[in-house]
Amino acid sequence: MLRIYRRFWQVNWAEQWQYRANMIMYLLYWLVSPVVYLAVWSAVASERGSVGGLTANDFITYYLVLLLVDTLTSDITIYLLAFRIQDGTLSGELLRPVHPILTNILMNNLAFKALTFAVLVPIWIGLCLAFRPDFSGVTAGTLLLAVPAIALGFAIAFLLGATITCIAFWTTRVYALNEFYSGLILLFSGQFVPLELMPGPIQQVVLYLPFQLMKYGPVQLILGRLTPEEIARNTALSLFWLAVAALLFRWVWRNGTRRFSAVGA
Image 1: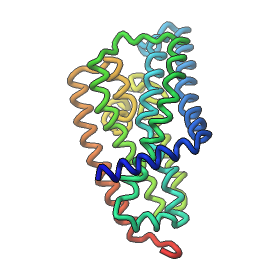
Image 2 (image 1 turned 90 degrees about the horizontal axis):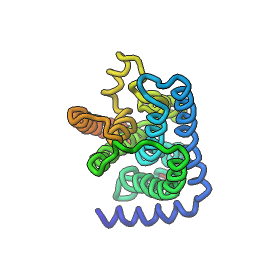
Image 3 (image 1 turned 90 degrees about the vertical axis):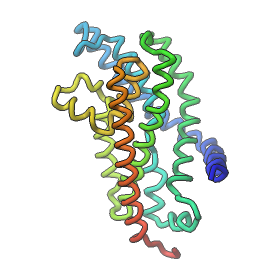
């Protein structure tokens, strides 16, 4: 099985180099939102002194770390698979003795991330030199703990994204559904605003949803802002939501492929 994954990695890594313009477009997409939010919230905090106890540099530090975490945990399955379901080209992949999503699509995601992250790092360093964030809370320990947190965050995002994508077996409006799902991530993952600035009751609910495990949780962990109890809670939540996402994906995939048909299939 490892040989299969290695081969898919080689193919998808080579493919990424053939679509450099596409990679640059996505990189700009990932850069714009965090930098805009950083500029807006840091400007507001500078004028008021702080917002909800967060200073301008707190916002700068948060969004610069978020930029890296967002790149590592985001999922692009909808753009790799939905059109194959709709135009019937998935039928050829279903004939292979491996799961098309858990092998080829997964490796495509990882190859895309690897190349995008490599290009992003020098840009990120330049942003750090320009904005001068405070990384005093970052330690080797927090970085090591963040590795499994980010991996779990991506796994949850990947399986939920694959589940949403497989709704294409039933409807052609899957992209509209994905936009709604993306909106939930934007609001409840800490991407638009750090979750501690949300109203108390909403914040308590959001902390138990899967979205914050994709972005906000790993960012706070890297910055050393989580207690051992909060780290343990997020780890347990990540495993719980990973199991839920896996079950949802399995159910949607199984039932979707049963009703799938294509000309020539």
